Amino acid sequence: MRPRVRALLLSCGILGVFLAFAAGAAAQGATTAAPAAMPALEISAGDTAWLLTASALVLLMTPGLAFFYGGLVRRKNALATIMQSFIIIGLVSVQWVLWGYSLAFGPDLGGGLLGGLNWIGLTGVGLDPNPAYAATVPHQAFMIFQMMFAVITPALITGAFAERMRFKAFLFFTLIWATVVYAPIAHWVWSCTGVVGPDGVCQGTPGILRGLGALDFAGGTVVHISSGVSALVAAMVLGRRLGFGEAPLEPHDGTMVVLGASLLWFGWFGFNAGSALAAGSVATSAFVVTHVATAMAAITWMTVSWVHKGNPSVLGAAAGAVAGLVAITPASGYVQPSGAIIIGLGAGIFCYAAVIWIKDRIGVDDALDVWGVHGVGGTWGALATGLFATLAVNQAGGTGLLYGNPQQLLSQVYAVAASWIWAGVMTFVILKLIDATIGLRVQPEEELAGLDASLHGEAAYAVEI
Image (cartoon, rainbow, N blue to C red; front, side):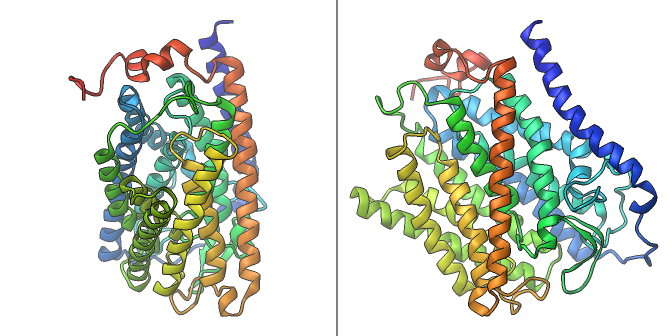
């Protein structure tokens, strides 16, 4: 059988089994899935305007990531690296409308593990608010906001296998991963089949981790741990780039890296403050602590690298800013500025140490440090939420260890462990299946020539730079 046919059968088989299970369970539970009749909810023009604006800001983050990653690779791979993030916007957006949103946020199939296909193709996802998620904005506004999260998450993983993955394999991996890894974790952490009370408690069936009390305001587990752990697995499965450890594999455009980091910083205000789902005090607090933690992490990474290597690195400051953005994400709706300072400080130290350790000590070629920044940063942020969360910021949140509730930290540990295990195991399975059919890695001669020319037949620059 030709590899192209095998690849098609593989992807259809995995997705088919997964979706068939969801569809069958949804059909069996159709008589009980419908919520009780609710009085008409009033749409807030201010909340809707803010959420749509935040959605656009989060969308901007993916092109920002493309510039960030594009500058970090060698010149011969710049366009191919940017293309991965760009095409994911199209691929995952369509997947989200057809079945991704339903699996992540649709009526629970049982046990808080996965949504059914009740909302396939956005059936039933209209312009009236859904009180389970956002009672003052149209349901489609919430859906499109969450779409932008689903888009950027697999794009983050691409930094780990930069400069060596086949484009066809990348497309299959992204589609399957978004369905089998991202959607279930999003359901565990954020879903609610029922309505949400003023205390933030799901009055119905919550996702399993939400039911355990785990807090993740904007995606520390759902986005960053899932992508960071998957990135580590991908780097190990694909192996090192040719010349790794033997020749310099230096970034080709530092200015592009700083531009990308700046766009990420800007867009992240929509990511975190938008997760309040309303224009109010919680959004304001999330906006403030996001900026404070990011600033602290950028300063910390630069300082640590200055002490370690003797120079205040520009690219290090940019990487530190991203690490701070990652770490504050799960805590952004629950912590005060003082807690954000400590979270940013920890992100600058822990993520820098992780990046140095993984390359210099164990030799894994995580090309653009995805695990060190997102995996470690997301883990630190999720655990720090269990330390610094306070009801003084958000009555729908929780109280952390430092405010007298050790159980919150334990709930965060459960969420971190579950996300690590599911993302790591399923990513390994997906990659091995794809490798066994169409192959993951480009040929050595293609890698040496650069993916811009060998895969896309184009060049990022018309002249040598």
